[in-house]
Length: 321
Image (cartoon, rainbow, N blue to C red; front, side, top):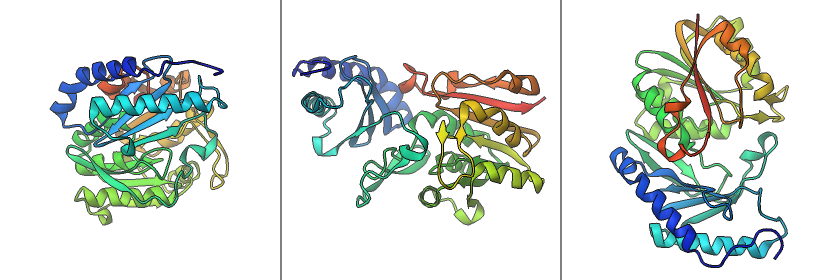
């Protein structure tokens, strides 16, 4: 075989999964967590991410160390992973979902994998519930690394007017609404807004008390600035890159975040707070932001225990001086 070679023995992977599961057990049980990251490319020969969703597992092939033509090696990996997960967690192979997560451009990361799939199910993250789908899309509908941020919103949204930009399937919106905020959720995708609407329903939140709005966020910021709208709490978690046909201009977060944050801050009420997060690797906040605004990085507590071995995102609280 070309490329990497790996033994057909799955023992090393199994032992690592056992070690990781033991390390996380207390944290998972204490917080009643059903969905979490168990494995993050811990063994170089296995360049995968393994996430657990209740009785299911999602395995992402990172696409960096495997030779694209080496199907035999890929099949060997899959067999070893299936066996290790089955023995450690009791998750049978039919409930293990393998996906290839390569470097994406634009909105390719949201492409449909199986349009005929309709297997949505609910994951509990007390006090929340979220719909996930492990087959239809590359992403599942729930960003696991934002678990602490959801808890933060739950305890810091009471009585506030909240704006969630690039809201995706609305998990952060649910958290803010559950915490007593009135939430406006904006995304370019009607599919995700419908998903967010359903997430409100299963959390016993009346969607009619909140706003779900489909729009190009970059353009909508200018419209709402013109209308002098203001919000007490704004959540800004944009994609690293997007060139969707629905957008008039593409978005590169490294290049565009100073202007994006500036336009977002224009909607912030006096004493309000912007929470900005990005999963762009090696992201650096431009100096102009800290020169104009009060900035506090919160990545140290916004990244949960199951992700602490990696800088999965960077997050900041930004306020007016």
